[in-house]
Image 1 (cartoon, rainbow, N blue to C red):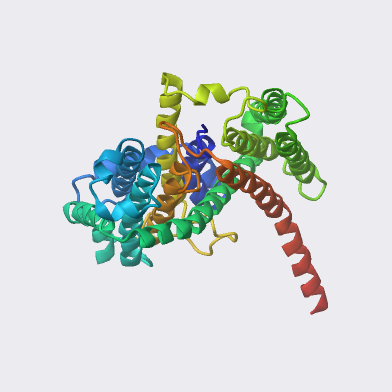
Image 2 (image 1 turned 45 degrees about the vertical axis):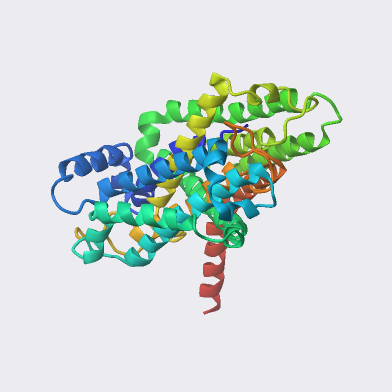
Length: 424
């Protein structure tokens, strides 16, 4: 049992949407690092009944996404008796447990179709006075009917089509993870730049140093604990490999950040170290439970209160991670946007928001079935299996690569610009 790659997302990604706008501004915007979230909430509450309100609308979309997750979980763990009544689901290779997995895929497909329709109908919206802003922010009875209708229609679809969607969902979920880790990495770099500004360093120099040391030491302590818990003997070669590679990545990110040309300090590699250590831990926790290499597996094999609470937290984290990534429409902009935003511009990219939620629908389907619709998932478990383990390990390694590239890319671009200008 694992909580998924989300606990850090909730904290990091939720601020990423606010951080992306601040990073594109001048140093004067740095004083508002903590006030953007409060401002959004105030604007949302003040304008709830005052026409189209895209700030409040995003929370309602997140609520729809949460309800869909709970429906998928209910069908997986407790829906076999109901699904048996649907003749079309009996072709699932004659396996009773596969009915629950196919139910997850059908609910996920309905959610994907809903948000993909919203993506097609709101993409390239620029101004708040456009009709598409009203469609995005209002018309909730019609959109609820659309969501329920698309979800119901998927239960009439033939099983081969649902299984095909399950295969495509692997790629959509992978794309979701990539966008998510880019969003988190850019937020960490923005936070590091904010802390390295002259004003912040004068006010909070000691606090920044303490946080930097705590995060770096914390990542090393996490690695030591993983060696103790998940590599108790030399027979656990795979776990030893995972943990050792994580240790190497932490040291490599620190070395690159502290190099004379980058000079990023210890805060960014410390936070990234915590992030990759968490991803490694979640990957190992996703392994099929064994008595040899996972002393903590016994906790995740019974539906006790710890297991149930962990599952509930994991579901909430999935929604929070999808929400925070969806509102960070600038996470894929690796160059600062030219010009300032106007007052009638939309507060976030509607099309990107719905596209991320559509990919998030594929993602929750994959972690509910362990990235394999043909395996048995125990009740109150999430993201367990070798496929889940390797997906998370790949996500960890890719996160380290993206971070290192973001650190050295400006130097490479600057060197090329200097070389091209010298030639001319």
